[in-house]
Amino acid sequence: MTGGQLMAAAERRLGPYWSMTRSQVYRELPVLAEMGFVRLGKPGPRSSQPYAITASGKRAFSRWLAEPAGRDALRNPVALRVAFGEQHSGNQLQTLYTGASEYHAEAMAMAKEQAKEAKKAGDAYGAAALEFAVAYHKAALSWLKIAPAG
Image (spheres, one colour):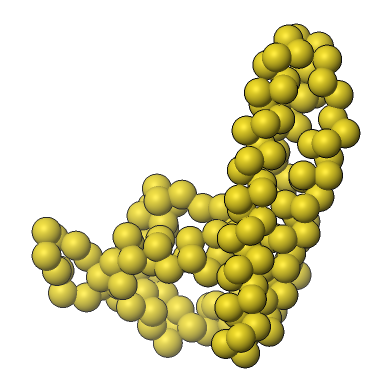
């Protein structure tokens, strides 16, 4: 797959619970190739560069899966702004909360649908990860209802 195809596939599969940027994907692919974890394919249309995982890359992935997961990296831009709520007007906070509520409601609905599809396809692990995303968005919506409005 090309970097764009990898990004699209990762966004579909991981996006509800793991954020990534296109620049991260494109920055890491040459590093992975240099390490021998992926190999370059023949350039495609418009000089697109496909990559394929190598046996060494599969072994490295298996080793990574066996490592401790580490701690969550929590970064919520709405909570950060709420921490400075005294510097906002009530209208600014309400606008912030409304936008965040709309985002979380939409993201929760999408994650629920993806979880349902994963269950139907027999992907219990994918469904479980998606249920995490559902619970996260549900928790965010609950918090937004009780956050101080100024």
